[in-house]
Image (cartoon, rainbow, N blue to C red; front, side):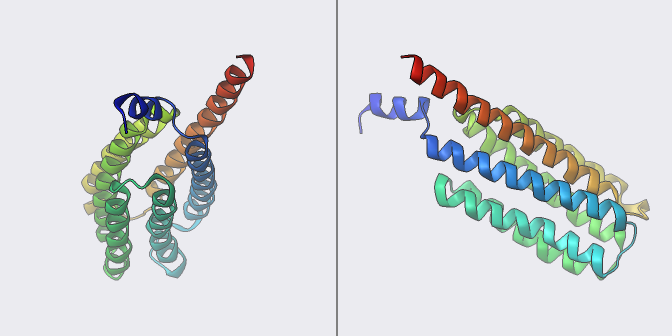
Length: 192
């Protein structure tokens, strides 16, 4: 492939890749919003419901990364799947201990997953709508550090509902930005 063709394909990403990512972001928003609302109501103690939700969140992240990898073919997504799978296992084991143990696992996962999200968003800047994902990745790293810092004295896990809710909001912002970009690109294409 020529350098010109490579540059052109990098400057104008395929519409199907942008549409795929937009749909994924909308689904991730809906899941995060529902999860956060549910967990805010029950996340003050370790019981069957809260443990199920705590395991479900990183498991959904594995599924979302697998769906994303089908189109983008970005190898970093496989790292994300491995990290989130480890989080599923880690949370399940930590839940047998206590709330501080769960928050430590969640915090470690939030830091590493946030770094992966930040890296992916920086690589995807040409697609548009990624500034919210860049912010989300950075905030995830900071939130993870916060979870680790407050874990020893924690008596509730409801704080992770806010983390998920904010992450969902960033997915919604990116999805809307991608939709607007698509419409703007279509208007420009029709004008020429």
